[in-house]
Length: 189
Image: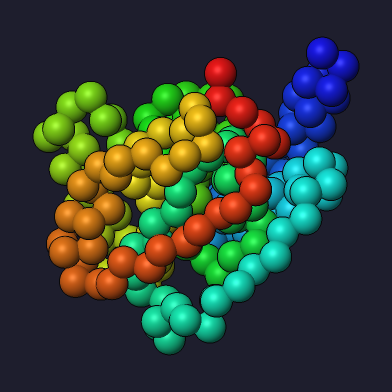
């Protein structure tokens, strides 16, 4: 219980510390690059607060222009700060629509140009994938969690087709990103 309260307090403090400057500087940077930069710093702060070590392997295998669909497994809420805090380049992410309704966090996500997806409405989901393809065409890789949600067991779940449809639509490769060891950190549920 106390550990959960400390985690919530740390996440809340970091969200205010990095979210407010991201919101205030957003009008100066309509591309979303500055908001994403703040999201990366927020993630690194959370990793430090949680004493979560991250080791990155294989980044040299990315396409030189980094135009791709990054597909990552999703075992824990910790996966987000792990990816944002360790990938040393700009990218955009497709995230479930409900995250965009969270004050500060959702606002920064919108300002950064992240793409919301309504998984319950196929037509809206297709429009989101088209917006993601436009992000790729503008020079930014897009990150997708193809399982569609976090795993309840830590095991890899069946993939939804959206990431692969996006890669076809954008004409770019799919680059797998594997995250190991995050399941026990912030378990779903």
